[in-house]
Structure formats: structure tokens, C-alpha cells
Length: 369
Ligand SMILES: *[C@@H]1O[C@H](CO)[C@@H](O)[C@H](O)[C@H]1NC(C)=O
Ligand SMILES: *[C@@H]1O[C@H](CO)[C@@H](O)[C@H](O)[C@H]1NC(C)=O
Ligand SMILES: *[C@@H]1O[C@H](CO)[C@@H](O)[C@H](O)[C@H]1NC(C)=O
Ligand SMILES: *[C@@H]1O[C@H](CO)[C@@H](O)[C@H](O)[C@H]1NC(C)=O
Ligand SMILES: *[C@@H]1O[C@H](CO)[C@@H](O)[C@H](O)[C@H]1NC(C)=O
Ligand SMILES: *[C@@H]1O[C@H](CO)[C@@H](O)[C@H](O)[C@H]1NC(C)=O
Ligand SMILES: *[C@@H]1O[C@H](CO)[C@@H](O)[C@H](O)[C@H]1NC(C)=O
Ligand SMILES: *[C@@H]1O[C@H](CO)[C@@H](O)[C@H](O)[C@H]1NC(C)=O
Image (tube, rainbow, N blue to C red):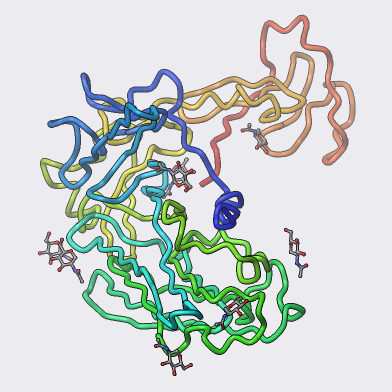
């Protein structure tokens, strides 16, 4: 149960498909349970780009759905940032002080020969225990190999602090960029057999996981709960993905160029991944589908042109002053009655909008990059 606490801290930036926008090819399923499956991802034959095929598993017994990429559990697909959030299991090693045996379970993530890499910005390597040395063996898209370690020790309960992961019961290390393989292992000579404080757990845990989802609690190392009895617990990992390893320049000249929507842009990821697509500023939807990118109605947010009139435009919006007023609300000059002297920075002052028929002054405003 206590590992579930990890997950309570996940800052989920839910991506929900904008309403009324096509997310998949015609006739293709774009939902698995409550999860969105936008193209280039797809479930059915002919519904996905190569390398983005998923399986939707329905468990009739408990009514749950599982979205799988190979044997990897997908939690969420994020189109605008070309990422997916997956669920991953935790590795552990426990010392049995009666039989003096070590039991363990170590996990590896293998994304070689896929379009996915582990985001070095959003994930880290976490290791927990009172007599623990863990190794993280990794490989990146260039087939360079890396090995890092994390040591944690505790001598007294008092030395442990909630939220502090500095080597006392808890250790974290960043990861290199562009990883597509990672394997966790434990040093058997750091096995808690000599841990003297009787209420410290004789288990070590380790996981690669999303930085935002982790907050160290002292009871991870002190209470008697043993994670090895609950192998269903999962932690989130954020992966980056791309369409192909080509640059935008090269990809654009090809027939299978993926950014097919008007008002879409090509994005080249420098971490060895290649290119992916996004809707242009002021548009949202699916850049991988024809006409997938649709105008954002910025005026739906009443604070966008606060104190003036909002007019939605393709890819942007205008803030207009009511009739009889001057000003330039898009550039921070509040509307003011024509017969008043202008003061930049004065508080908004404008007439009621009840009799507006014509706009005296307007200017175009585009969202900034
Ligand atoms: C991921 O794991 C969490 C916690 O174990 C669970 O609540 C959630 O349903 C899982 N999500 C998927 C899509 O499997
Ligand atoms: C894609 O566009 C959205 C909305 O304009 C933006 O928030 C996001 O950062 C962009 N993604 C990338 C990778 O630039
Ligand atoms: C990772 O997966 C690839 C392809 O599935 C396989 O060829 C390779 O041997 C795996 N690597 C390891 C270290 O297991
Ligand atoms: C850490 O927080 C838990 C509750 O979340 C609390 O029970 C525990 O006493 C705290 N430990 C320390 C050392 O403050
Ligand atoms: C546990 O670690 C100690 C050293 O701290 C070592 O002597 C012992 O052999 C290890 N036990 C096992 C089962 O590997
Ligand atoms: C094993 O550990 C428990 C608590 O962690 C302790 O109560 C018990 O005495 C230990 N047994 C042996 C044989 O060391
Ligand atoms: C891109 O991937 C292909 C195989 O899909 C490979 O042959 C090629 O070397 C890669 N190019 C770069 C620049 O990584
Ligand atoms: C509305 O616009 C304001 C100012 O531009 C911004 O701070 C806020 O996050 C927006 N709210 C929503 C729901 O988009």
C-alpha cells in the first residue's frame, strides 16, 4: 500500500482530446476504455503509423481496460509534446533474516528498435533502503552504454526526513538523454543483513520514474510493509517519441511526411529521436490528420481580453476597445474614453458594452511562441 503514496503525487497533466475534433482515421477506434488513442497511435489494422500499434485489452471480469505497447502499459498519450506516460513496475531486493536468503525482482525496460526513448528531463533513477547499492545499466540511441549507482544508508530513525532524498534512506540520480534501454540491479553485499535498528525494513527498492511523481516518506524504509508482496504497484515513466529519425528538412520532401494537417509544424528533437508534428500556435487537435489542426477559440477564456472585447480569428484573436474608446489592449494600453488623456498603466476604464455596433480601434494579437 505504501508505494501507492508515490502515485498520489503524480502531477497528471491530462490530455483530453478537444471536443468535436477528429483524433483518428475514419472508422478507427480512438478510445480504449476512457483513454484516448489519437493517430499516429492506433489499435486496429490500418489505423496506426508503423511502430505505433497498441493493443486494447478489456478485462470483462472487472470491467477494466489496458492499453499495451508490446508488454508496456500505456497510461496516457500526449500529442502536443510527443510523449507517452507508461506504467512500470518497481525492482526490489529483500533479506530474510531467518533463512538468511536474499529474494529479489529486477526489471529492465527495452525500447531498442522502437520510436520511444526515456525522457531525461522528466524522469530520474530512485533507490530506497537502509543498506542499499543499486546499479542502473543503460544504453542510448547511439548504442553508448552507461552504468550509474546509488547508495543509501540509515543509522537512526531521526536521521530520516520526509521529502529529503540525499542518501539517507533514499538516493536519486539523473539519467542521460536519449536512453532506450535501462536495467536495474542490486549489489548483494548491501543486503540489510547488518541493519541494526530493528524497525528498519530489510528491503531495498529501485525504479526509474517520473520526477514529479516521487516524494520520499520516512515510512518507506521504516514500516513493516513489504513491497515484494504486492507486485501490482506501478510507477509512471514519461517517454518521448518521434515519427522517424529524419530531420524536418529531409522528411518534408518525402511522400510519407507525417505533418499532413494545414496549420501544423514539424518539430525536430535533438535528443536523437528525429521529427514529430504539432499544431501551429493558436491551433489545436491532431497534426497527423488532414485538417486535424483546428482554430483555438481564445475568447472562450474571458480573461484573455479582460476589460475589452475579444474577437476570435484564425490562429489568434483581437482585443477591441468599445466604441468611443481609444487604447491598444493587445499591447497593454487599456481602453480609455476618447475625450480623456491617456495614461499608460492606468487601470482599465471603459464604457459599458451595451451599445456597441462599430469598433473604433483594433489591433491583431497572436499568441506568443
Ligand atoms: C497504472 O498504475 C496505477 C497505480 O498502480 C493504476 O492505478 C493505474 O490504473 C495504472 N494505469 C494503467 C493504464 O494501467
Ligand atoms: C505544441 O503546441 C502546444 C500548443 O501551442 C504547445 O503548448 C507545446 O509546447 C508544443 N509542443 C512542442 C514540442 O513544441
Ligand atoms: C532489447 O530488445 C531487442 C529487440 O526486441 C532485442 O534484440 C535485444 O536483445 C534486447 N536487449 C536486451 C539487452 O535484452
Ligand atoms: C513523515 O510523514 C508521515 C506522514 O506522512 C509521518 O507519519 C511521519 O512521522 C513523518 N516523519 C518525519 C520524520 O517527520
Ligand atoms: C549480505 O552482505 C554481507 C556483507 O554486508 C555479505 O557478507 C553476505 O554474504 C551477504 N549475504 C548474501 C546472502 O549474499
Ligand atoms: C529478524 O528481524 C525481526 C525484525 O526485523 C526481529 O524481530 C527478529 O528477531 C529477527 N530475527 C533474527 C533471527 O535475527
Ligand atoms: C535512422 O534509422 C535508420 C534505420 O531505421 C538507420 O539506418 C539510420 O542510420 C538512422 N539515421 C540516423 C541519422 O540516426
Ligand atoms: C485564461 O487566460 C489567462 C491570461 O491569458 C491565463 O492566465 C489563464 O491560464 C487562462 N485560463 C484558461 C482556463 O485557459
